[in-house]
Length: 82
Image (cartoon, rainbow, N blue to C red; front, side, top):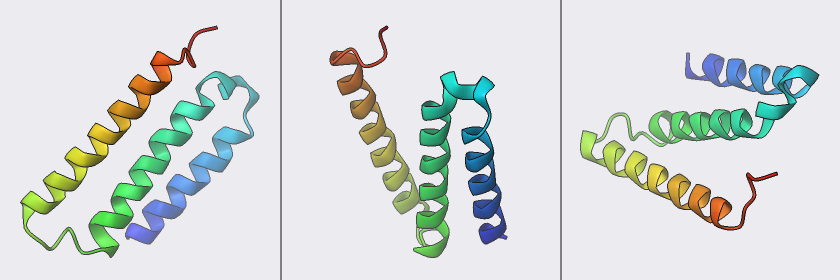
């Protein structure tokens, strides 16, 4: 089931890449999909799903913190401004 979900997300990523109307949201959507796929792989294939809930919470908190810092750095350098 997880492999089917990962394949579906990959299909959506490829589909979004080839649609010209979605060019403005291409990078954020691909980043979101890759973070979702990364989380699924870690939670299921690295067996975090079967460990204590605190390990999954710790991992997702760290991932959220890393993404937040990444976005703050990008905003600092003015990447999102025209």
